[in-house]
Length: 96
Image: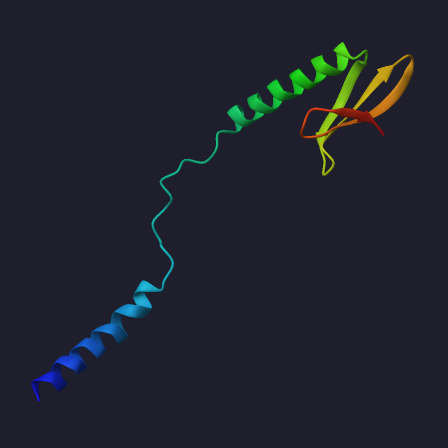
């Protein structure tokens, strides 16, 4: 009869503790949130590099630099006319 008591004890323990183990963690994450100033800084550095590359290719007045599904989009002037550009992930750019 002692094995029945032991089996009931284990079953009772599992019934009580398993639902508690299935609950999501309530402890806060130890990872600090990203610092927006460093994210903005990285983005501005990348944006400056892109502007330099476009200026080296003969574009001026580069503006409206935005991330899109196609890549990074920008507007610039070349030979007196406004161009819309897109830069892909490999750094190649083309006029739209």
